[in-house]
Length: 209
Image 1 (cartoon, rainbow, N blue to C red):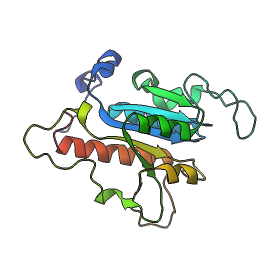
Image 2 (image 1 turned 135 degrees about the vertical axis):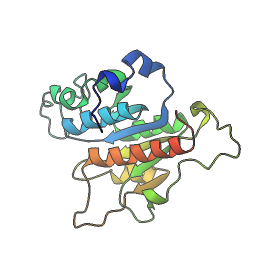
Image 3 (image 1 turned 90 degrees about the vertical axis):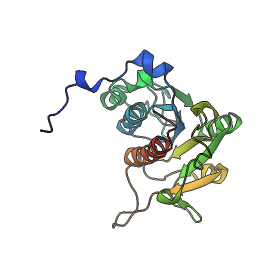
């Protein structure tokens, strides 16, 4: 019988163990994402897949209330409690950073050795199902996560997507194939898909246990 597991039977690690654990060499960068529900959802998925961190840029709301004023409208930011409703504590486990502009985050992450990837629909984009994060190992001893190629995936605004200047600054663009009538996916859904694909490749290669 497929009996559902209780929370205790899932044996999840606590926040301290999460902080100490090896992480997937991936950070998510939210480029002016307006919905606090989307921010919280990305943080929660980042916790589930044990990412290195999340960068919150521009008008993207942060768990500490930044930015206090929406730079685009000049109005006070909405209730930050909306993040907590969807993050469910992931804002405490996942390392997050607020940066005033996405370009500042890109410059910082590039200096830290990350490959910058815009998730967008562009000319010359690479389809997610055709992309490989890492070449297959040449021996049974795969390098530790600290020495693997690191990625920063940029997720765009709910209406405008990733800003063109940010796309131009990226090292590559990855696109999720779509076969229906709609032109795009919700940003938190997109984030979940690409995070899972990186984790799937890491698990298949024995990178993350």
